[in-house]
Image (tube, one colour):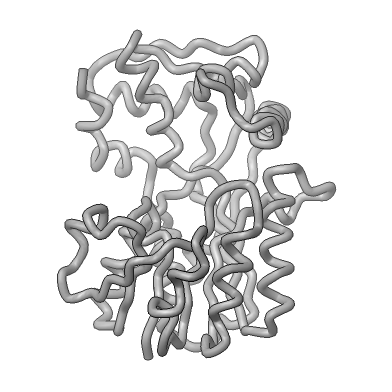
Length: 283
């Protein structure tokens, strides 16, 4: 049984590759640049291709039984390109977003919702993984931490339960290698609720240096800082809307799905910070 992993060099894909390798799975990685796959298990097959260039995909999909599908960006073209090559695939595990469960669906969720529709229309049995915010999103704070030892906070009293990408990968590996997960929908979160200020406090304690939290006047201020050369209007509006929704949610949302599936509690943010401390310590 051959498993193809897309997004293999990202935060989730790297963890998933190691999980599947540890299980002895027959595994192929779709990579645009083989050099970026350095450090991943050498026995794992690499296929050079790009979801943005459909003509490059046929060798990667040849003989594939199961597919982990992660597509980035704000459109559906990459998803459509993958499904067009997936005639022999018997099971897909797709990384979606918990935003598709909102009513109404916010802009950030609408792209994921459209991708889910494309996959459902293929008729291929699929496990939809719908995580909330990632712990690795805090790495977006590195420019201001390194520049001025501060973090811009767009959500103030808003609370959420970020998840370690390693836990998403562990659930994906389970779904890809064990029976009983086809046509399932899993909403994944951590089990600790945080404001941005609370997360920054844990990072500060981990690296032994106080980091200032500066609450922004509007979410758009963070978008302008994150994309100094400008962001596509659709993306900027979606991020601004997302931060506005997060600011309004002072209770937070979490599920027990990770614990129920893996038989253990999700990894903690403090543990994640220890593993990534050097990134925050660098000048």
